[in-house]
Image (tube, rainbow, N blue to C red; front, side, top):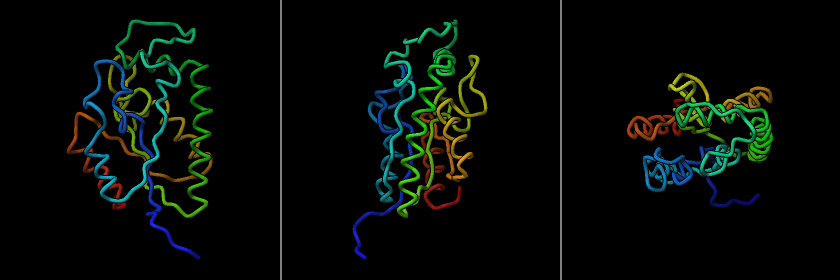
Length: 184
């Protein structure tokens, strides 16, 4: 048996935690990434698996590719959620979630510990505790995180899912710290 320098500890993070440039216009809180969270993970030798941005995957960078879905006059996040819930986009997200499941299974098969999945609350796609729907922030999961939660439940894979919020830096850091030490 040989040894290498890997910590074998990982987290799965929403795309925009590492890349705020992917966020819809006028909604980013940082110029590049949620640095406090990224630094915390790096300082604790935790590998980072970055999820693809489901909004870019389904709607493009400008979030205007409606895929033939009915447009409604809604706030940006509620409009995005409605478009992500269209059948064509849900199919694309579900196919992507299968790829994520495969990656999780591979890491687990070889003894890696996946500490958790870190989402971004209020997001119509990546919210964990809250999401946007019908022009308001409500309790619940975003579209991607809900599909990921459902497939993990179906496969009986337990991974904590936590929400952060870029407008609540200190609270978000405390939440991720709790995840790192196994108290979440």
